[in-house]
Amino acid sequence: AVAESAPAAAVADRLNYNAKTGKGVQGGGELIDSLASNEVKLEAIDQKQLPAEWQKLSEKEVKNRVEKTRTERTALQKQIEEVSKKRDAFIQAENKRLAAAGRGDSFDEKVAETLRQQAARKGISYTP
Image 1: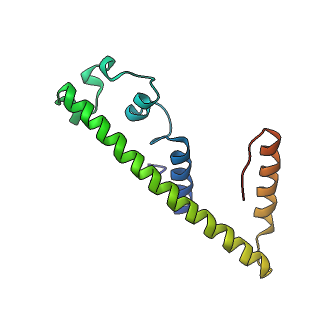
Image 2: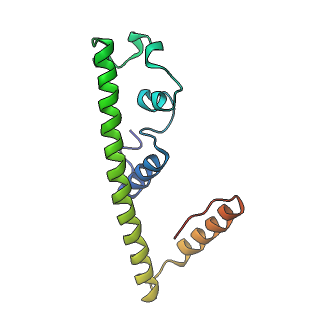
């Protein structure tokens, strides 16, 4: 509920992060992610632990549903990555335009630069 009520920018950042990490949902206990990472084997899951609408399906139907969901999620994650790249490019261009016009947000720039420096010390690179 908190994620759904978040501002659009926060939602976009969260989707971008999830797509980059290959996760559909943050946190644990998500079936498709657990199967993809081999944390769980579908055959080992008790039918009663599956989502209610899947409990009445045969084993083959469950496998098909998992594969269909995985395929749909992969396609959505690719779309999210593409839109995120466009969003990032727009934000960078807008920040440069505002800075050139003397209306840039120096606080945000200082925070971003500090984060880049601290991340670099840990071997993490954020490309602007």
